[in-house]
Amino acid sequence: MKQVFKRPNSLRDVPFHFCPGCHHGIIHRLVAECIDAYDLREKTVCAASVGCSVFMYDYFDIDVCESPHGRAAAVATGIKRALPECFVFTYQGDGDLAALGIAEGVHAANRGENITIIFVNNTVYGMTGGQMAPTTMLGQATTTSPFGRDFRREGYPIRMAELLSMTEGTAFSARVAVNTPKNLMQAKKVLKKAFEVQLRNQGFSFVEFLSSCPTNWKMSAEQANQRVHDEMIPYFPLGVFKEKSETDIL
Amino acid sequence: MSKPKVELVNGNEAIARGAMAAGCKFYFGYPITPQNEIPEYLSKHLPDIDGTFIQAESEIASINMLLGAGATGARAMTSSSSPGISLKQEGISYMAGSEIPGVIVNMSRSGPGLGGISPSQGDYFQATRGGGHGDYRTIVLAPFSVQENYDLTIKAFDLADQYRNPVMILGDALLGQMKEPIILRDNKPGKFDKPWALTGAKNRKPQFLKSLYLNEGDLTQHNWKLFQKYQQMKAEIQYETYRIEDADMVVVSFGSVARIIKSSINMARDKGMKVGLFRPVTLYPYPEEILRRLSQKVHHFFAVELNTGQMVEDVKLSVDKGSRVDFYGRPPGSIPTPNELFDEIQKVYR
Ligand SMILES: Cc1ncc(C[n+]2csc(CCOP(=O)(O)OP(=O)(O)O)c2C)c(N)n1
Ligand code: SF4
Ligand SMILES: [Mg+2]
Image (tube, rainbow over all chains, first blue to last red; front, top):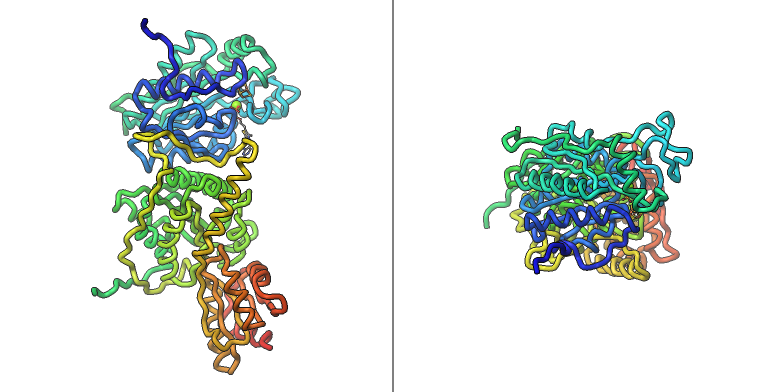
């Protein structure tokens, strides 16, 4: 019988610790599938971040380096410069990249650093208990914006994929979602493109995943998927915001 | 044997050249006075050896690039001066926790805050007590000449690899800016097995470098392991003694102050005062046992520093009870002259 579904080789055979309905597990799986698709398991080094995805080395069957909160893009820069033949990516939450690590992210992009950032936007700080993130939606109540985010007080949710598409060194920047099978299939296509950009040494590639945090959103898994559709996608549109062509290297 | 290669170089450049002699291929830094000759030299010369120079967006980014490069087993360095070193502390702590080697140079300037660019030894506590969060240590080497800037930088890379630990060079504006002739070594960079390095999991199991230990007891065990390593570092203790054979008072100083006070000690000797110098070269691990043994012979110590009293605490902790420990220090602003320090010696001598 033809096997149509199996665990990617780059994922270990252990259960995820993520809460039920959390998209981190889906995104992990997509990343692992892409690593397998390009046969990169033995030449990949990941700079992990601090957030709910901090245990990547427990799940991925690849080399992983822990980074201080926010600094994964700098750690990945050091790794990639020392190992230009390796595939190097970071996996960062919205607190990690869009707050603490925004300088490291923007400058890695602007240097055209040949790394890939996987950015998981769940509009909250998941790991620390649901505090406000730079991506928290207007009106969204969190443990540190209990009355709902008000732009007069807390400013606006930040659109990282658009922001990073602005730097000249960025070769690829896109936003995807995994809340429906259709979006998931599309997400994988886009993620593969980002991988290919790095494999062709084209420079910085970036994929933002709209992700769910049912626990801190205080929703069921279904409600959380619906929220991605109803609230997040209208403000954080899906699409490719920058794509350098293969000949387009300055 | 061929004649040694001697060149007149600036103190900061000596550090950069020491790094290259040690086989350092990666440098990450952010400009700050008084250490800019280090990145300037390396930006020009690292490309000669296919190395990488990055002027990072911040000291925070620099230290984390160092962490990343070090994680692959590469020899890498960052340098800065006091305010920038403060910014690097979280990264240094992670490197110590994950046991990632790397060399960090602090050509310190005066603080607190933006302070000034004059020489200072005000970062002694920060350098020797860990500096960042958690119960860790970095090896700290304190050169006192341009030659030592060069030689100790070479040594720092070997120590970092040997102990899988960050190593700090603690100099100051004076040591960075002065020019002296130095002997350039025909150094063969030390070779260290690095089975822990992250290089892509080819022909081996995947591995990781981390400092997070959440399971019951694991972090305790990890910290004890680090502690044992810090104990082993005592084998690296380095110091210099000068005219102490018959001394009845021993001056204890490090770095540029030790350099100046050697002249003051000679002046004192000319006046018949039996004064010598003890100069720690490793500030961590501190040569406490050597000082303790010395204090069984000599009972009067005089700590002199370019701060208001930091290393003097280590002197007091080292020497036998009953020893007299005097202190002279001054806040940053002006560099003491040999004559001024001779006056201070005279004041406390007997
Ligand atoms: C320097 C520092 N500040 C704060 C923290 C605490 N902290 C850990 S994870 C986190 C936020 C994580 O949120 P995010 O990056 O969005 O990841 P998520 O858990 O939502 O996937 C914070 C603030 C830390 N570990 N280090
Ligand atoms: S707290 Fe949120 S982000 Fe973290 S695992 Fe649970 S659902 Fe996922
Ligand atoms: Mg988050």
